[in-house]
Image 1: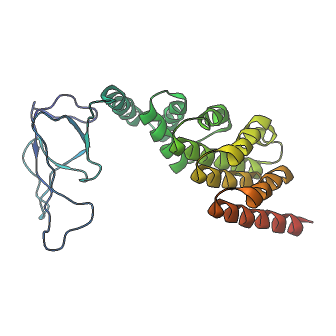
Image 2 (image 1 turned 135 degrees about the vertical axis):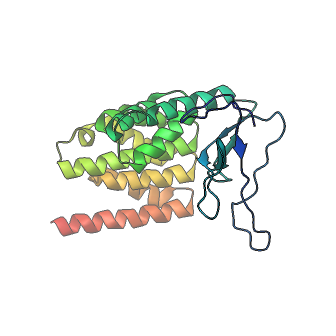
Image 3 (image 1 turned 180 degrees about the vertical axis):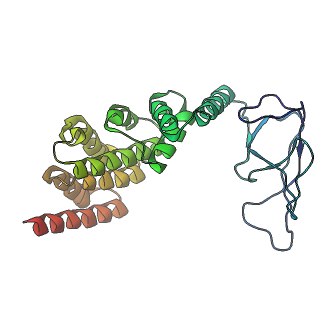
Length: 247
């Protein structure tokens, strides 16, 4: 297999050897299949140095694919430049010294036009709880993104910010920023995707204010999705119970 570019790590030669995944045809494991590389096809491979079942290393430049499902990413005909640029950027971030430096660069990707980078930023910032109040503007902008997954990812990070702000105190900036709350409220009432409206309920519940409760009650009474109405009714009950207990 010919090497066109190495994003991270080192390979001494211009070619490499891939040891195919062993597949048990009698008791196959879900998601495990033998790798297939078509002639002329370009792929991004996530590789591990090959080690056999006895723990013995393979020869020079001999690797196995990380997993069949995610370790071999075919470069598509359309969008190839965006995918390759995203992998280069992401690999560069992972080579920065220290987790804090990596997360600071990862947060910048929330503002990047490349959808592959936005997706990575939403996932990693939530995974490591790396979002900060200064990211609120970028997250609000993503609430208008045409991809539902980006809107739900943005709502998850806003909810995380709000929860952390409530622990800090009522003077925390995001709790007093009307644009953030208003855009979440608009999303819960108007977004076309019920999964996004459902996630917006969680975010409003994190705010926990009387205005948030009022919006959630509105959704519980009139959302076109029965599942979203039920979720809103349960969230409203929790907020009312919490308010009663605080008196």
